[in-house]
Length: 401
Image (cartoon, rainbow, N blue to C red):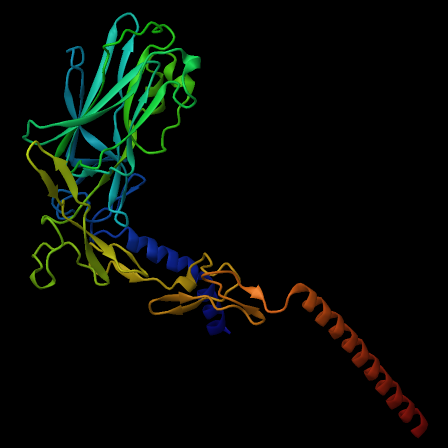
């Protein structure tokens, strides 16, 4: 009985244990290294402390707040009213599965109350901005947000604006009242300086009601415009005291692309079995004389049907989808695991495929009703026949007495 009870308990806890194991693998860190800073999980190649991170991926933990050691934020203004100062870039989250990190960027602003005040922003980053998932967001009655980027040690710079010119508030097209969005150009890369500022050449006649204009580097769809954001002095800053979240794409390799299989460097990042190397997204930049294509390294990925951290030994673990708490065959199929995935054959009496489609009954409803009716009649006949046999048996026993 004890053995049977233990087996039953193990079966009941297996889905929970599997989730814990997969979560541990996905958040993998080197032995003896901290896995968290506050509520933020720090997976390798990022790390806190000596020998716990790959070069360029150091994280500093100040109580419950995590910061990227090699990336800096500088705030100030061009008018000399606010002193320029560098600070560490705060982290919001890290994902080895998607090779990105969320960080916070301060909101740049220009306000006109009794006198003009402004704040500009510079970001110095070792990782590349995600051109697909970040936008430049402008907010204000009048706003001319400007974002520019340039490589380290270079005088060349590119940029783009997001503008809301002054006009009658009611005459503006729907969705443009006090807000503008500009997509991020695809030609940014690592080792660049991002500068964000709000220009103030136009006079704001409505400064008593709408004193501030803002520029934000932000993950797409994070910010939703609200009219109260442009009323009052620096009201938008109260919504984002840490800054607005944006996405950084990281690459682990120091080479321009994945190394050849037979010539792997000693610091090759993809150390887990069941993992492979993938080239990071290339970037292009137009110069006056030529177009240059530059890759920014490589990333590591677990194979399909494996999950975890490819940057640590044994980090990618096989997934038995049929043992996951969530049913991978929700359309009437029965999960059958196999080496390279799973299948969802339909239950008895059903057809099609429960994985690529929906299992349906072999017999249509009308046929099922007819079969059910016939089955009911046959059951009644059988019951009646059994009753007759029973009565005959009793009668025979009575007369024998």
